[in-house]
Length: 301
Image 1 (spheres, one colour):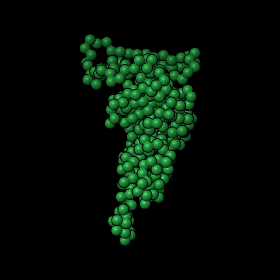
Image 2: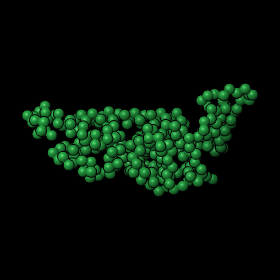
Image 3: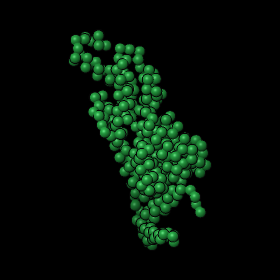
Image 4: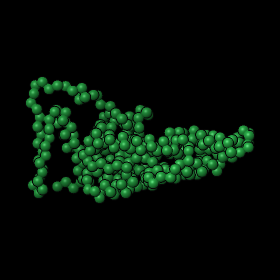
């Protein structure tokens, strides 16, 4: 008997292959008796070739040994205009299947377990994360909670995936901070819908923070966490407006982030670089001083 959690990927791939041949697959299941699957394929000598199903040369190829190695696999690393997605998954079949679905739309890094996934996320600050639930070293719940409670990564949308469809497993995922929970086997359309929703969440965050205006209080926990970060960032700049030598290194020390982590965090939330954000904030304060004080240009500068 199998003891490990089933991924459902074999059935998902079978269904896709059957549909490519205009066939159908049916399932019959009886508790205590077992489950049987029936595949029906049309018999014809004149099957039309559909353009959507023309096989294209693969954009990536991974040997079995490569998908099981310790180092992370990176797909489309040279395509910087694509969103960067981190896949945390220890099953090579699931890795291949997920990459086959997403490689046209994302740069993808793969981490083999929860601890590696957490390390890669903190080092590279991805745009999105898809994490398996059951993994060695650290499970998906722990990964999600660690990332969502860390200012450096709290803004990153996270999708948990698992063969566990029980409501309590879903609830635990959302309690850990997950933005979405998908049950294996997930199909391409469902995955893309969820990722599109999370990209929309990123857009809403940018709209909220990019114009430097005072932020209205929100009941949304996602906004509350990032509101606190932006408030601390602005307060740090505000306290040092008179110090012409105050810059990015000093902000990194005050915020407790590396230069790259701070840049990627601010870029994700405001669509500005760190230096651009500092300049824009100082200019905004200068305009306010001109309108509310008798200071001249030299004094404001």
